[in-house]
Length: 366
Ligand SMILES: *Cc1c(COP(=O)(O)O)cnc(C)c1O
Image: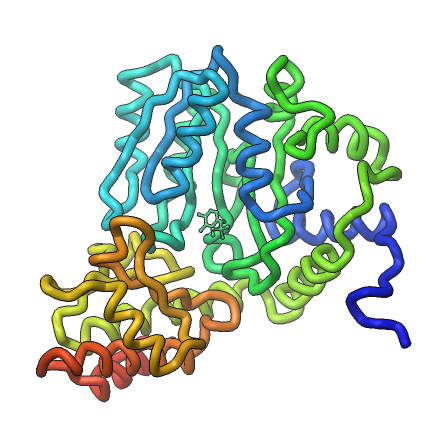
């Protein structure tokens, strides 16, 4: 008997190209889309190593842990890096980016994370894109946590390198990712002697050996399972409608925020301004004297399937993440998360009202 996962035929070049076209439609882009055979960190790193070198002056915006990583890669490439770090409870503004250009007109590369699943904020990419374009810098965007949860429009926003992964709001697997690449970005890579070539990290290999050859011959055997899953994921979003998928994430974020505020017990939205809170995940600040990781552990002990996590690293003390993305962007997951957090908080004191939290969440779910 054939096994559904194991006895797969090789994925053809035409099939591979059709999945790329599906991703391009999702991104509403005319740019080349390269699907990479690995988790999103592969194109995130590959795109930086391809475009940055000792001649690069990079403005690296840090609104969460990924920005930190991008700065490390940029420095490793020999780039001069200007870090623009903003507190994790807020978003960066276009004005801050404009000021950075005024101070350092030599900036020719900007790296930015769109939405941060790890810290719960989302940045105004359209406005920032206008500033970046006005100065002619190359614009690199990590849209892994925003694609599917809010609009991601690389062409309209002037993004030169837009990286996505399927594992968050797209509701897909973690093993495949994609990047859209502008003509300007290809030219920068071609002129960069340090850009990876004949390497798994190489975007130029895909340009020269796949795209320029008319997408007839693949570079290596593609990961069939992941490609089939990515295709299914893109087709499901198209069938439901991208707008409906995004609306579900926005509703989950609004309901979680409203529910947490109504819950009491000292829990507060971590991102202070709702307009800067990411639709993909909601972060909450625990009351002083409470350790977030311990509260989350108590909530998960009651139901290990809940989409709850403590913040990473030093944030584990003060931050709770409600990861309401993909199939968890649903009223049931939000309600169950609020109820479990309420029960865990209630163990340590009065003033917690789970019924009020659920009512507020239901009202906010539109
Ligand atoms: C999730 C995510 C990634 C991918 O990283 P993993 O930790 O491997 O899931 C990259 N960038 C951002 C902004 C993300 O939220």
